[in-house]
Amino acid sequence: MSDEDGDPIDGSAGGSGDVVRRERFSGGPARGFLSSLAADERIFAADVAVDRAHVVMLDEQDVIDREDASAILGALDAVESAGHADLPDGEDVHAAIETAVIRRIGDHGGRMHTARSRNDEVATCIRYRLREDVLDAAEATVEARDVLADVAEDHTGTVMPGFTHLQPAQPTTVAHYLCSYESALARDTERLLDAYGRINRSPLGGAAFAGTPFDIDRERTAELLGFDGLVRNSMDAASARDFLVETTAALAALATTLSGLAEDLVVFSNLGYVELDDAYASTSSIMPQKKNPDTMELVRGTAGEAAAGLNALLSILKGLPRAYNRDLQRAHPHAFEAVAAVAEATEVAAGAVATAAWDESALEAAASEGFSTATGVADLLAMEGLPFRTAHELVALAAERMGGGTDVDAAYAALDAAAKDVLDAPLDARVDRDTVEVALDPVQSVASRDSVGGPAPATVERELTRVADGLDADRTMLRERREALGRAGSRLDEEVSRRA
Image (cartoon, rainbow, N blue to C red):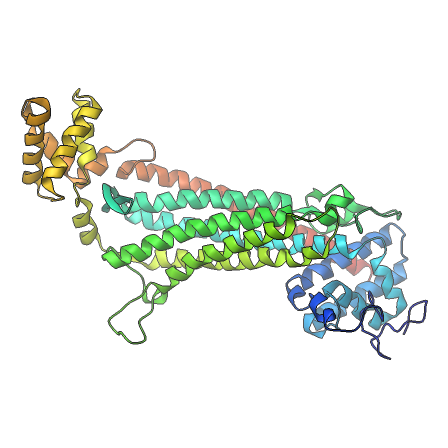
């Protein structure tokens, strides 16, 4: 089988088997260096879908006739059934699929590439596949938030030490702590869904970069493929990869959130505050007494991978001239690797939280360490009319004298002595002892902090209602986007079936 110039296109007689290159540039080690066929397996299904939509549109626009369209679509069915592994050698999946189609139905199969370039084709395939991956990652964050909220609901009254600079700072609750990560993950969800809106634009029809003289319908292929609109400028359509940067940046931010959660769980495991389930830990190969939070360490490491992918993307793209450059072949794998790794890390982190056991006794005992209720006493004195800065000085002096003890009598004695030094009056001249002792109690201290977003149990319970509403809204958005893609897939299947 050969093209109009008689060049072999079926891989026989020394041909390369690639309809794009044929005999040109066919030798030497650079052929393997140029090829992305193996890595393109992830966009194989996307390319078949893009091919189908393009052929349907060409038929509707009378750019190719119905007979050729039917034959090409039938060959694409066979190529899809055979799978990526059955493709002939080629420079990339796009050329390999086209070659496979031509081998099945002859030269007329080459009409499938009319009015397009691999430049707009690959850009469309990347977006087609990536949008599903981003929805999967966003769904993983929603499920992780749901887990955090469920566990928080069980621990609204479980006091624990709160830290700044890894030093005991103020008492809080496990629920308040977990809700802080739910809040961060909600922003991660928002970033991914926002990026989705810019991913889901079709570049197909932009051709190499300067459009095409054929009477094509770009809006129709966008509709058949489930895109919300077009990347209108044809040069921008071929060259734009900022959606990869945006997506990978959102994933790097998500991975950073997860890394913080993982680090906390590693530290809390070390302190005896929490025990990870055996499914999320391992033992030492030599020290049988150890239980290591290995999964959380790997989650923590994923942030480095995602950040590296983002940096690689920016480095690849920063110096490129406009339109298509082959450097772009090295760009999109970083986004795909990041979305796979970070989505998996999200699921693992959620599973670890869902199955972890919090030691409530150890947490409560630690909640008062380091005079962690000192700020509450300063607030109490300020409420009684003392300038806060003076109250701060008084409590700081008492904390120095206590040396980090937790005994209530010792704390009161230190505060009383400090009051005499700073105020020239005993502490009970400002506030009675019973009120001070309430402020010194971690449970009471937490209960008093009922400002919006604070740790008081009633406040957190109200916050969890708001969290549930946000989860419902995000689930609805995800469902609607998946349903829209499903409807588009059904429309494309119907148009292909009509031509069978």
